[in-house]
Image (tube, rainbow, N blue to C red; front, side):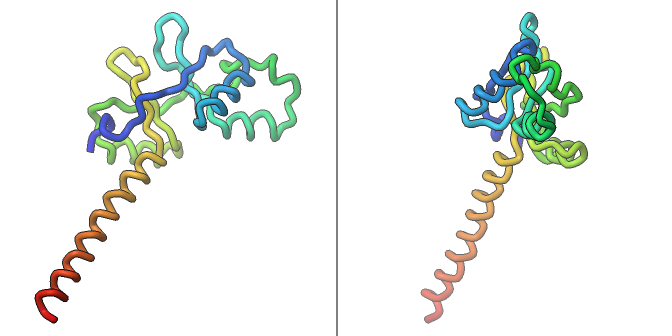
Length: 148
């Protein structure tokens, strides 16, 4: 399975100069756990901020005056990224290696084209396992009808 088949295309982005409150509001308004930070001129991916970054990195440390802290001050810039043509298994190995739950999917010029989250992969696996279980149920049913 290729990344393009599983990644979400709606990706919420933010300018690195916006404050962390704006990032939190975007996450809340769009029901997402992260925002992708993009270069305001080139449009390339330069970082990520997750809800966990805000909670553990700022709120739990009782940082005050969040309106004065810019996204660029808290974003993670060492990113694990993927391309649409990559195999999901390869990306999962990198996600496990670097302990990340979300991977920006980038185009040929490092522009954001999607986001692959571990939740997307789990949902796909759940559907696949459900199909496998259905095969087993059908087989048992067919045998019970054939051999009363």
